[in-house]
Length: 503
Image (cartoon, rainbow, N blue to C red; front, side, top):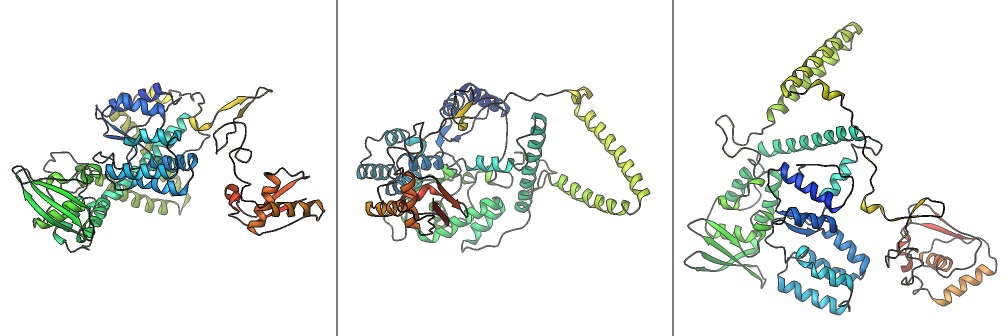
């Protein structure tokens, strides 16, 4: 259940041609193995490149980006709740269509351009329409964002290309070291049995890795709420009708007795690669103590990193890099003791340091001879690439002085040249009582001087009076004692305690 980096590349631009080259290079590095699913943020160039290079992969849009776009384009809390249900809810196709049609009609969004566009792409984001596609429960691009955040701890924006590659390699070594620790925890030690289905739970603990076993244990705990309602034998398989306790909804589980194959109408096995609770109930109904091989995905097992036909010297559950970890730990302990002893006297320090330098040079020469690396390769100079702008940088215009300036865009209408406070679609002053505005304006005309307040509603009135109604004042000062969010000022809410002083 951890992120694995198979390939990486440096792009000078984010065009469709660059993405096509990137994915084809990735396909070549993976020896023609295409991914089954791809999750992106909806970039058109990336979408076109994925459909060109990976025609068999299912393309899914990031749920987090869709919710953010829905909030910015529609912004109605009642509709957003229904949209979230259609996006992530465990629904059937007919249930999705009913909820979507009713919510759009209730809010009068039938002709909204974003609603029409996103509904046409429902097969790329609706949980009801992507059932049966293998996504391992991933719904967002949060793994990429987390990767970028962790990478930022190793790389500085002032590094050149050579330093970037070196520190990026250090980060990959850090990731792989964490995977080795996770492999060690999965290979050694057995978790405590917590459910009543001890036989199946113990079998799963010996097969699955520790992280996947914790997820499977949650499925076992839910098995007590499911029961088999009826069975029906056909010429090809046995059908089991499974229902939840005190619920009207039911699922169908089929079992091919000859091939020992199971399938469920919920398609969780195809989506996540792990048994669903309905299959577990059928296994208990059939008095099975082990999970059939056809229901165990290799990638979730402890032997996922081992070859298909292990030799006699390879022990089951053995970590391939365990020998390296053991030698590294033993050598590290010896080096600590060596450092402690050699630093007590200066003569010993000089002697040990000289001998270590000779040993290091000798080992480096041996490694170069084994790998066949030429000495001339060390003298190759790599120049830094040209600076490139990414798509999220924003558009820029040339001013009268010949300088570049970013185009300011309104977050309400999306047009340039103004912000949300000056937008015609803004309703910031709709909740302000005319009497309160008049009273505040008269008090300022009377020359009462500096006015300080921490009352939220009064603060909202004064701020909107100065900004929205364009009161002619000498200056308006907003002094915040902590971080202040003016995004919710039209609702009369100020997140941080602050003072407004009107001179």
